[in-house]
Image (cartoon, helix red, strand yellow):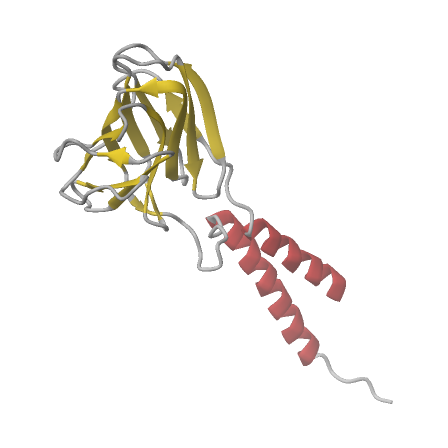
Amino acid sequence: MHKLLLAVSSAALAMAAVPAAATIQIFITPGAVQPAENIQFQGQAPTGNNAFGVTNQTGRKVTFVGSEPLATPSQGQARVEAADGGLSQLSFGLDTGFGFKEVEFNIFGTGATATQTVLNFTDQFGTVFSRTVDINNGQNFFSARALDTQFITNVSFTLNGDVRDARQFRLGGVGPTIIDPGGGAVPEPASWAMMMAGFGLIGATMRRRKALPTAAS
């Protein structure tokens, strides 16, 4: 009986540690998602390969990281370019512990030497969803949506050449990701229920064993 109870408890704990299957949809047409917030630059100058924006409703800091020094020529809706005029790689995300459900941005390809880009969207469990798409010599809107309990925590793209800049960044569903202090995923409700049932079974058995009369010697 003790071994059975231990197995039930171990199985419940193991299930609780497993995150739900991640799902992030990727779109390559404008308007596929309608994120609620703009990312804007409000005066904080880029520092080397980093540039900093803020969401215009929730006030969350957004950090952009390039493979070379970045420039932010406009102080309104975010526009990011390389200091040398040719942007080839960029990633962005919120502070640790925060993510978003939707994202849209425009890789502005006017005068581009790039013909393709690899898009990467990372969720709070570290799973990366990728897609390789063509770049037109003009506007290229890309977007993604995280389903169910998933959040997007980082977005990146790598081009096979240069583009003028990236712009019109929008986020939706900004909020804390479901991560516990130990770095693991917080269990789904069904996993919690199984874990609690296992502990309850152990407790009930222990109480019953204590109530049994001691056999006479």
